[in-house]
Image (cartoon, rainbow, N blue to C red; front, side, top):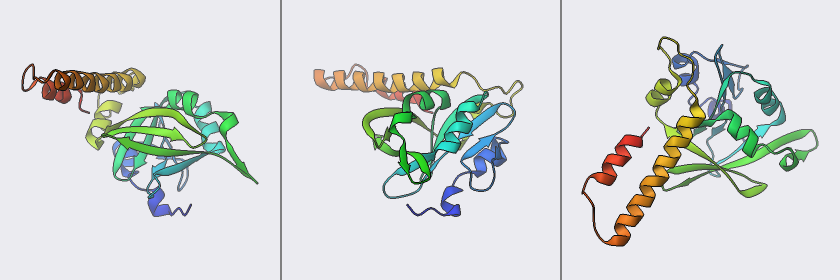
Length: 195
């Protein structure tokens, strides 16, 4: 897969300029500061595919800071908890090995504006990500706040996912009943959980 520095550097300004993170060398997908560690692959291809190499995964696993997994998907930022991603989606027995290359290969899937990561060697295994604007990501991380330690993001990410699934269930029920409880109830729920 062809990969250029320009493609790999897509959307990194938010990490460096807005979140105050430092990149581990040119072209690295690892960003960190004293409080936060970010593993952030870029997906800028027609196949929606990205790889994580063993050295980046090892560095992420050794990290003891609060971590985020942020996929820079075209112009979007897709966010998840790093520890949960590593535990669920980085399975040593499913690593791709070829000569000196050791890596995992993933695809981003967008279904009805919900984003998932799938492992190429285990297509049924999925990891949910939440799309965030730059402003929401900055708020989420807490930059500029007194005591800017990251809140327990796994709770927030899963609450958002659960709320979205609940809205879909409510909308499905309402449409199956052929009526609307209130014209704005589903829209109000959507506004409440939008990130």
